[in-house]
Image (cartoon, rainbow, N blue to C red; front, side, top):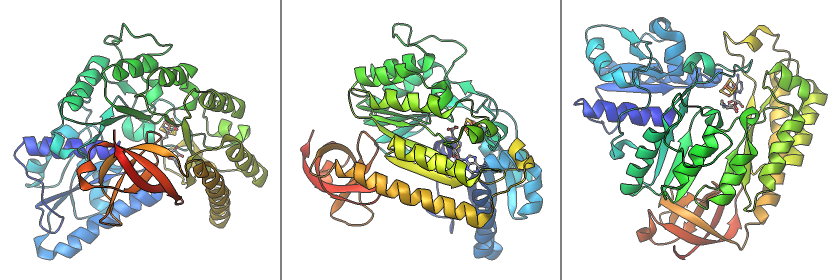
Length: 431
Ligand code: SAH
Ligand code: SF4
């Protein structure tokens, strides 16, 4: 979501006469996009502001903050980080050009709402990749999980009109993009005010209708993230089964394997509900890669409850897992609970789960050894000049030996080596 917002900010600025500088060393204006989901990210952003100001000395650029920290802290940031010249909240991305012009005369901020959600085309040059594009379909969140800051920093859910999404996908296809990611805090909570556009497509929910409609555009690869367990419908799996170009990957964050903790988190589902979704996903015709998120050390989480999480992770066979240590966020209900799990205990639980996942993941990865996978070659590998890099349809990173002329194409790759979070292989040919 933040990468997508940065693309939007860069594109808007360039349409308004600004130019992208090659680095922060020469830029007249530096904008830092911030995340407040955990305290560490927030502190890092503020440190970066001061670092840039210090390194440029008397030539210090105008520094602006955008994103969630900007939205939540607003004007107070001028005290926390004195080098900040302007603050653009999560709704102000499109107004950054005006904000910069004002900030030249003195510190200023804009925490107003987005005027036209998601509208306006992105200049392809400002996308993070020339082959893979992010397409926002829903913004904000109504769920209010007790630990999470997102509903406060991003506001209520707003779904983008399907006709608008379909228009963008068709235009991306015409520009040569091979893969899109439909993105949002919870994509499967998609519920536009006007449900027009995909009328002729069946579906048990607006999201699965949208998936089928997007699939019909012929975009070669369609991925979507993140899915919210309470709103997960088995029809999503059916849509994937019906359409080869709906990729075989679902990211479904479970957060905990304990019903008591899930209730305290106000996630709105129980472990059995989650397992039902896992079974639907595993029952698909194509193998679907399932990945998830876990928070360890939520206030009051006992050792036994953490063991329940370990058991759930063992049972689900996640092909990737993001583990987070609970971080209290000011203003959320959980921040009022005593943060009972010691930092050292959080670290222990984090490491124990990481180890468990690493060994489970290696077993899953073994199935890929010797197998042929389809990889969208996104570019040259950062590690070796002879290798290319890309992702499988199930979103695994694959580095492989192949020719530079393969960049941008979908390549058949034989996997001959397994790394801890990626696969390595050799190109067999272009699809
Ligand atoms: N909407 C998605 C998640 C978005 S936030 C969902 O509900 O599934 C991305 C991840 O950050 C979450 O899944 C959670 O694991 C983590 N996270 C959010 N708030 C956190 C906090 N206060 N401390 C630690 N991790 C947190
Ligand atoms: Fe945060 Fe919960 Fe919303 Fe996800 S669903 S963004 S965890 S409040």
